[in-house]
Length: 401
Image (cartoon, rainbow, N blue to C red; front, side):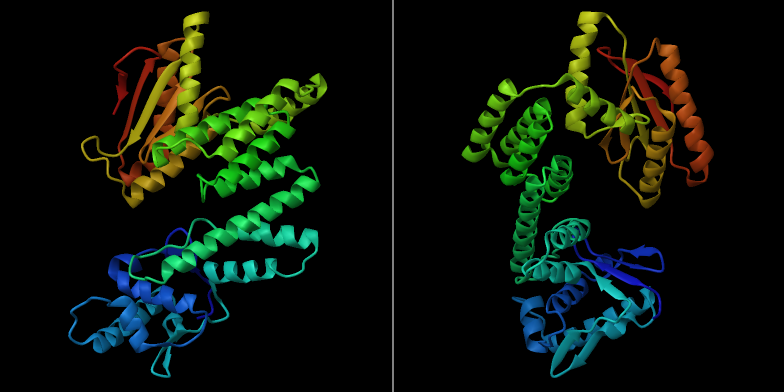
């Protein structure tokens, strides 16, 4: 087993070997994946068979759990060897139980994260601490994946989550001393993808935005957090967030806007806008509402276009559809204009706002995208459907598909 093997346990469970990502183990045996997770989280310590049986078959009426455990271990070793020859040897038996023994070419994200968190609790130079925290942010792509079989797994999941947030807070504090507010925005944005309801992250993000003269962005951040809190928690943001927002609002009223600073900031951001603007659906919806008001006031024209891949009667995603959606996104990125605004409306649907002169122009644009799509992905036989209509008019006009 000379090839590099990466086992992912953060966000979801998958094994990557020889450039191929394998996710089929969960479908084959959820308990088998739970066994691997349990042994990995013990970090090389042997686990008795009785302990594994209590954890994995608690409340089960299995008449012979010892034999069931041996059978499952044998099957998981075979499955791992199918992914990468010799990988099954990582499950080592002995001392009345089993342990996970990582080969040199096997990397597991959760174990590397645990090592980084331990290192961050030691004395480190400021720059070295930042480097390790950035590595942590790259690896922590979601909370520890749990199958539901491990009672002890939730404890480890909570510990990792809290330690991750504490590491982010410490890095933000270090960057504030250096007045690196753009990096703070990037870090907080990345961390909110892991925990979008953590109020401290949003407070730090809003404060950094204000320090960059982006008061309106800070206000939008507060409104987005408020909306999420209402939808998910059925409550307003905590008092700390509301007080922070009031402070930021006051700062927005008194902050000294320098024309050259603002102009330079806008120019820097303009350099990054190459091609259409991709955004999340909540942002897309806000832009849509703003455009509707502008259309009424200025009498200008804008079109709404929708592209859907797959069967109209059955919108369930397949691996081929996912591949086509990724390819279609790149086609849109390379061929749409700067003024176009695009969002992933659902798993198999893109929605777009197109500043066009007339319907004919918009239709030609969509026909070009369809041609490029079929030129690249015709062999996969995933249908392309498109609709386009001026804003404020329904229903959308069928173009093709």
